[in-house]
Image (tube, rainbow, N blue to C red; front, side, top):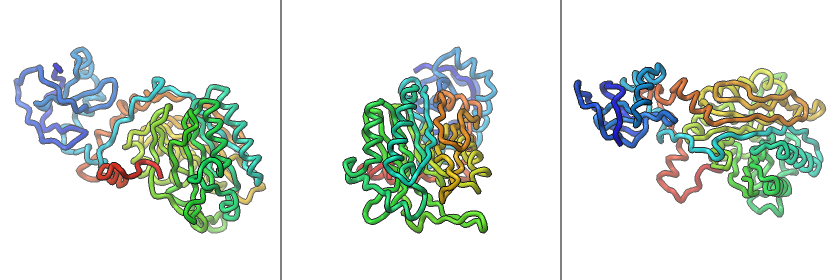
Length: 395
């Protein structure tokens, strides 16, 4: 492919794989054969020529990029020895091309949860159907939407997911409504019983009602704030041992549950795996909720230039565990796209994944990281690469 030179910076390195430095000679020819490894994943993708020049496959666009300050910043950074490609190990994957042009309507169902499991299931179904009727394509439910949050409730309300839908009424409902309404559902979480253990588990269903992913909460909520709140999930629940990134008809979706949002490394790995959006079913409390709930959502979104969705239980003041509520959708620039207060409600937001590309061009963090000073290792992705027969992105 013929390309035009738009820079002649010395000691350039490829952003996606380690490569030898290319020495640039003054007066070199202005047309080269393009290296297929792209520098920037966007509509304005740059690439290196085999002589080390930063190029674009179209002449007019190359000229426009030459005058673009944002790309001058990129090239200046790449001209140094930052080795940004090594800041993530394995190297970061770009988000895949999403179906439907990457534009979707998302619904977040903040539900009142009672001690009556059948009532909770029926209420969730009503809310999902109503959201689907209003055009939602991706619907998110809260953490522990089928049972109260308490150590006493978890074993009573737990379901054996691996045994099939016949013995899991909560998931049978989600599969049925997803299939009938042709919607994708990130099914909050329910207590799961498996192998003598209890887990806080989220199941994801596609628009055909098929179970596409199962994620077990990785970081358990064990805290002690004297005279305010003490809770230890680990007294009853077992932590999961894997991450969850799944390709769906609404893009590449990652999942965390509540306390997982406090761990930025997890969100960084999700972004590195090319996720478009991270969904966090949750139920922050009345102590940490007012201070941290919105802050953490914005932090994860801005840190990774990604969409973040949180879905909480509605607040019931008389409950043993009182949820903060305030389910929210945050854009990749930290902007709040939709939110609510503490009552039962469904909020909607229109999301456009092209915003990811825009914000990553505005601030090209991926190419400004200091791989020569630090790196983040995705352990489970390395294991998968070494043994493709192992289970991948779900736990």
